[in-house]
Amino acid sequence: MDWSVFLLVGLLLLAGMVVLPIFCGAPWHPLMPKTIHRILNFADIRPGETLCDLGCGEGRVLITAAKDYSAKGVGVEIDPIKVGLARLLAKWKKVDTQVRIIRGNFFDFDPVEADVVYLYLTHQAMDKLFPEILEKLKPTVRIVSYRFCIRGMTPEKVSADKTLFLYQLTKGNEINQYS
Ligand SMILES: C[S@@+](CC[C@H](N)C(=O)[O-])C[C@H]1O[C@@H](n2cnc3c(N)ncnc32)[C@H](O)[C@@H]1O
Image 1 (cartoon, rainbow, N blue to C red):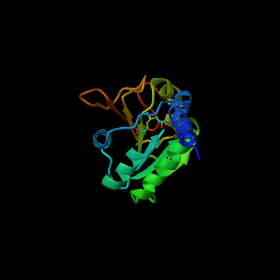
Image 2: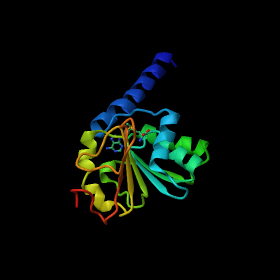
Image 3: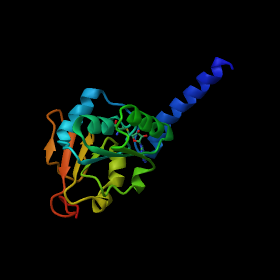
Image 4: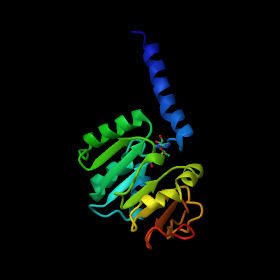
């Protein structure tokens, strides 16, 4: 078969991985390994905790949390190609029993089992998620957002470079002015 066909199919798949998510909530932007560790340390992930990544991309944050922090992971991703990639990576890294990747829309997802929710989205997507999502979360959940603060909520902790924000639910489902 002509190589140009493979090239065209490859380009179309890549375009799908990049373009589709922009219209669904957030663009795709893979992270450097040291950034992933910085996020997980900032979230203070402990062994046995369940980390939920809304829009998990290729799943590397969850896979690192499972491998290096003995956490459990649940990821939701809208793009079927990244879902397949994340499942393959989890299998390859031998954490597929700890990490579950769900193909779906995070606006419809119920993150009730999360001890920690991790978000790397956009302000627009988070404005749509909050405050409704708070009602579905455990009262003790920690929410960590990379690059974008959650508008209308006061963070418990902010990294020195102001790229990481941690929010903690402490009083039932009440938080700051959201209740
Ligand atoms: C900036 S990337 C973050 C990926 C991963 N969380 C990380 O930090 O490496 C945002 C991801 O959200 C996914 N996404 C966008 N809209 C979505 C939606 N409505 N439901 C599920 N996933 C979505 C995109 O496909 C993309 O993989």
